[in-house]
Each structure stands twice: as structure tokens, then as C-alpha cells.
Length: 411
Ligand SMILES: [Zn+2]
Image 1: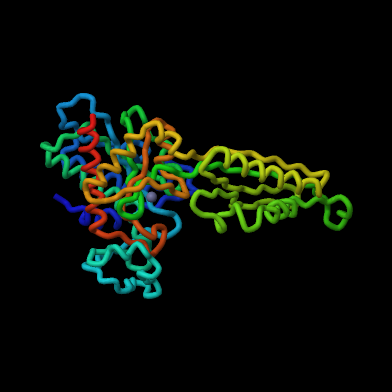
Image 2: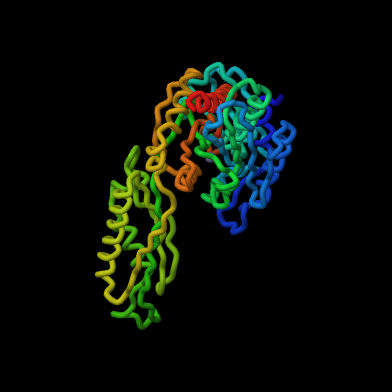
């Protein structure tokens, strides 16, 4: 039997960084290195149907032990890739046993210091064993903590067939960090009724609400001339783009001025020449009405800017990215309730919360698998200061096992 910590230390040493610029799937081949190891470990545990598909997804089943035939099939899901923001090559995990509140100075770059004052969640970790990277890489607890927890829970359930539960599906996905994690999930093969991504932060976290998200692009056609002969004729597309960006609401509706349930309009890229330019935005809100209002604000800004450039044109196109999972989860309240009950039974007071972002679960929920997100214990992810505690990972394993039991009991 391999502890959740052993597993975690094994998995983080494998570089699985995904690449937003790649057009292949998975976006980087090295993600398969971990997926292949997971496959072998699942097979060694005795999971006979475990397999790795052509896209790099790992599917596996823990067969039901319950005599009840109507227990819904639940799925636990984590992603194998790490963020493109910080390198994941040569991760050297360090366990700091029985942490007493001191600064954690990371040895390979002493400027990288994890301080209690900067990481309020550390306050609950006194006496715990904290795992960090060594200062030059991320740790990869996002989401290898979740992977290790699901693997440890799988082994535990297989070794304890006396625990009654229904059929449980395991799914490990590539490319979550580049927004493509659900692109090739085969829902028929998965054949689950509901699921949980194990990719949340603080112990006890249960997220059942995400942003609704659209991408918006303004394509501008200016009027181009030779700059030496441009008087009264040139309408510079780059200046129209700048005009639009400068006209965005000040002091509100931006990522840097909003929190909690407020949405925003956020320019992410400007490209072009005096002839043509494009400005890309992401639009976020928790409600569809709020999302559409923000798109309308953007449209009005564009049209107003165009009145100053009468011979130019601009067009706004909006593309759906993902939707607030709560719209789906509200129809299946037992999915959230059963996770809350499982956490209560292991001594955690879980409150459903919203997340200012999306998860693979937001997409899965709309693909027919209601799928909130539960904690994996990962903190300060996408940074060199990433950390996770061994005790939180062990708690997550307990929660996964308990969720399976609650579903069986209530069936
Ligand atoms: Zn993640």
C-alpha cells in the first residue's frame, strides 16, 4: 500500500506542463508520462478495466460492492497537467515535518519564502507536515494532490470490499490548465450519473458555482493611407483599438476592481496595424443576464468610438466559453448535499461556495455530468510558493471514501 504522500511525491517529479500554444492533443506529449504511470498503478491495484485512451485520458472503474442495484454511478476527476505559468521541470518536493509557523525558505532560491503572514491558510496547519517545491519550480499540487488522493482512495476501497458503495468511475484528464480538459471526454464511456472534480483549495471547500464565461473579439477595419499623404484620410485601426480600451469603465467592471459575485470585462490582447486591428476580451459574470449586460456595454463603447472614425468599421463577435455550473447543480441537489454530508462525517463544516473562474466541472456539468469541485488541499498554485499539507491530503482521501458511502446509504 502506497500512502497519499508517497504517491504525491512520485507524481510531482514527473513534468506534465501543458502548452496553450499547441494545437495537438494532449497539448504536450509528456503529460502521458504520468498518465501511463497511473494506468500501471491502477492495474497493479487490480483495476481490470483501467485504460489510457488515444487523447491521454485515463478511465478506470471501482466495481460496486453494494447489494443495492440502484446506487447512482459517481465519478472522481483530477487533471494531470500543470500550469504553463511556471516551469514544472525537475520539481524537487520537500516535506517540512511538524511545521511550527516558521518561514519556509526554499533552498534553491532563498528569495522564495512562504510566510504565514502572506498565506493566511497556513494558520490552520501548525503541527502539520507541509510539502513545498525547492524554489525554482512550481510544486504541482494543482492538481497532483487530487490525483494522489483519488488514487489512494481507490486503493483503500479496493482493499476494503466490506465498505458498501456503488460503481465508481475514475477519470484523469490532460490539459485542464489550457482550458481544454474536457475536449475529448467520452461521456458514453464514462457513463456516470454525477461527479466531483478534486481540485479545490482549502480543506472543507466545496465549490458548486462558477463564473459564466464568454470570449469577445472586436475586429476593426480602419482606413489606411501612406502616412505622408494621410491628412484628412487616415483612420488608424490601432488608435481605434486604443480608444476602445481607454473607454472601458474606470474603477469598476475590471478584474482589479471587483470581487465576490461581481463580473468584469477584461481586455487580454491587442493586435494589428494601422489598417486592421483586433482586441480580444474575456467577459465574466455569475448570471447570464449580467454577462449579456457587459457585452452590451462593450458594444456601446465600440459604437461610440466608431463615431469618431466615420469611414472605419468594427464588429463584435462573442463566443461562449463555459457556464455557471450552479444552473445544472440546482437541478441535482443531492450531488452537493452528499458531499456536504460526507465532509460533516469526517469533521468538516462545508459551505458551498462560488469560484471566480471555471473548472472542468463547469463544462462537465453542461455535458451531462453534474460536477462540483471539492478540496484537494492545494495552495498558492501556479507559483513557486505552492504548498500542500499531508494532513489535508489525507482528509481529502477520507472525504472521497465517505462520499461513496453516503451515495450508497441514500440510494
Ligand atoms: Zn487545477
